Image (cartoon, rainbow, N blue to C red; front, side):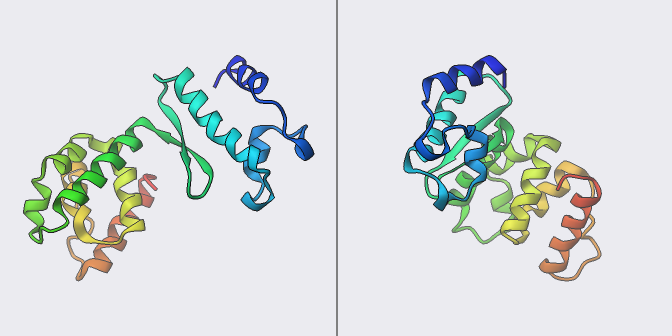
Length: 168
């Protein structure tokens, strides 16, 4: 982020009462309960401001209204999350793995190539199911879970593989 962009934003947003000297980065580091209501609005406005001013950048700030926090995400991660959510909605009722893997959004995720591996592996950590094995194998050309018995040990094999290759 350019210094001028941050200066422009800070000029637009006046400091908030008891933490007047605090930067927005310091505000985000404080526990949510310790923040003034106006600071939460500032965080939302910061995300909107940055996304409007630098739309072509590789990274984007995403405001989570439930946790009232901001997270920096890549455009690729945003695309992956959108596709994965759509895939889950449209294939949740299908029990056959090959039919789920042939769905167009799953194929688009595979088409993202190695860029998708960190997001797939993170999703595998968060939602430990075997649904990503097909994509992991197709993208990586490897199968570290080949000799594993059971989904849990296969998941652990893929997560070890991801850690060893610094995808996680």
